[in-house]
Length: 493
Image (cartoon, rainbow, N blue to C red; front, side, top):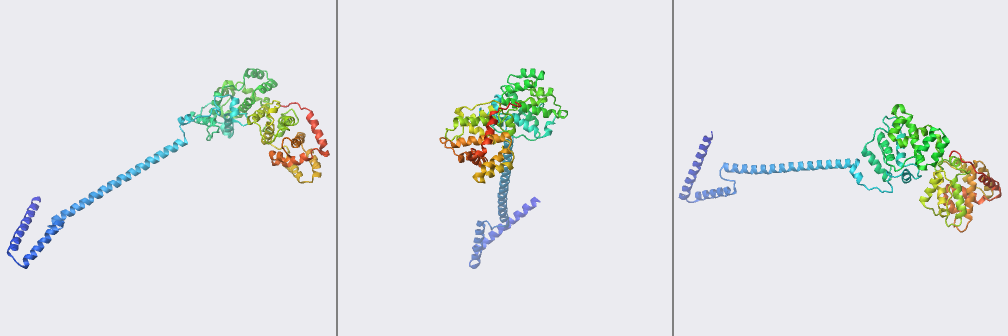
């Protein structure tokens, strides 16, 4: 087949060659018009050949084939480049998504090494210090360290947490405990997910193990002897010797244990397993305190109801209010802006802590500016009103709108409706404020005192200061002085 094609090709070439020779002879022999036409035809043929379009059909087809192959190569190259670009773009996007996912995961769960690198202010650290120092750094009232209060609040927020088996026995995740510890040391309260009971118990246990002192303040053996003899008064007196923060922390632990023992059948927790889980030095005296919660002293005066504060004081009104008024009457009437300028915040907190501990503290003359701060703190934290009810408070507030000649009589009737301690405080505090306002050297008036005490107090005590020395109120003032002269015996301390 191939040989036949070659023969045909050679035959065609010979014919073309023969025509050219014959044409050349004619061209040389002929003259005139015919020869000119042949020359023009040849010139056109040569011109087309130079342009690449003339000649025989095979040259034309080979030219077209080269052009088609060139276009195909160009197209293939372009397709290959587009395919590569598309793949690179996809790889780049996948890599970016992978990095974003990794960054998001790192933000949600910070690695342990990152938390260890963060510096902690040693003045805020709660681990590795005494229980009293931890309470002062984390609780505004200096009563209970934040980790202990956090565990108590978490476990008591759901009864099912107290029913879970393995309470205080199964340790929580080390990384979670360290993260919570870092948050506490920064001054923040961590947030635990639901049902992370083991981590909450591990925080409690870890904090107690890292404390530099013990709950019992060296009184554990003495307390055990009193418990063996079942002498509740002796136990009560020993607990009074403890610092307030340790006493309230023990009360919190005893309350938590009593709630845990209520579900003993479910959580399998007994006094023996508790002493093993928490530690012998903390649980050695707890069983007796859990069974007899009444032996705990109740000395806290700030942040309770008015009646509780009066019952825990040796005087007819809460002891801090009486000592502050005595200090201002003795040393503060000549001090400029006695109710405007506040004393040292740390000194005010120390006085509040001492009063809450059950001590009868007399405020020194150097700290006279702390006395108004203590009074304002007491009324800011009180859980009820000294006017007993909102209806009676409104009746006191409406006296301000009455004519001045009717105010004294109305106040007398309203004060008679109050309990003895409430009436005694209102009368004594009105006399105290009138003495402060009448002193000219301290630059304090009834209006400035009312602004400092707040709108609720100013609407009542401003008109009461004006008529407290009127004859109609003198018998109430006399009764109040007699009540102050009669000392009450301390109860439930």
